[in-house]
Length: 396
Image (cartoon, rainbow, N blue to C red; front, side, top):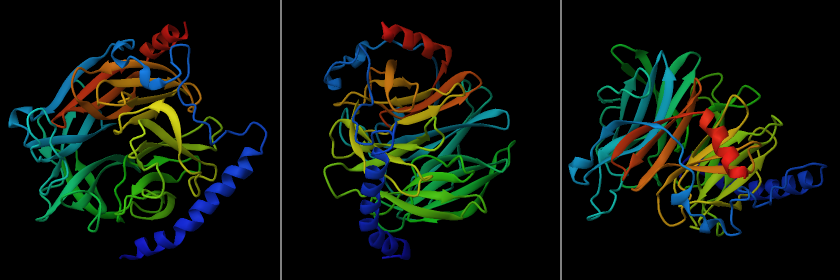
């Protein structure tokens, strides 16, 4: 057991106590957010049981489509998964996990946690026309793999993040988050900087808090959720704050995404529920990520898959996910005005296994990277103007 694990074990009882105290105190404040409310999806089009939504008949959101990488022809024995995007240096960059996949039979998607997995990348001038892919991380040590964890623009430099894991699976010993720095754009050359944080698998790259600090989620080797705060003094200077246990209770929170609410103080974290409730869960923080309320199950349907969100320049929030409770099809985009309740949802792509999205905003467009059957990297480009049409349509 390493030092960080010992500290986490000592802190979990305190985390539960602090979460209960915070929720009780804030609930008594006028106009306070109800941390226990399950309402995350609402509107005249939403049935009492959101699992009964006809997801295939949701309004279609127009988009332009591009394929970055496709290994479907490999017969189910290769994986392209964990897609991330960023615009930097006048071009769009994509990265993803690229490795051998355990065959699971005809019609089944391959596993994505085998040894010898590396991280690949490609670039595009506009997010639509993509060049050839290349290896970003290099091959891992025997018995290990790399999993793509996203791009981080820090102090004008582009960093790429990847976690090292001991295969098979991401839980257990040997887990650590690493960074590479882009030293040359043309040709692209990456230099390994070192370990960002030990015993860490983040879900998305860091974002800045209102304090100016960076924050990102951290899953440890026991699958508990923490938040790393720091990254200002150096790329590897962080404090870890525990937020949610994985095996205590019916909710098993995983793959968090977070954003700051309009009050510029409250943070909401959304979690996939590996307890397979078929709904997203969420928790809150009002002290810049140091303490968190316990995750509560919402009424927002989910297939137990990764999802991605973004806050737009106009203040709206978008969430791209697989809301069908029984399958990862289709991929949809939901819109919220307050970051708490989503009132519109539209159909992006489907008719096949589509999952693990990453959505970003750039110059009036949304770019959504996703995978088909864990064997492609694809990108949709959506005009932000389409969101207003979607909201108007579902207000009727």
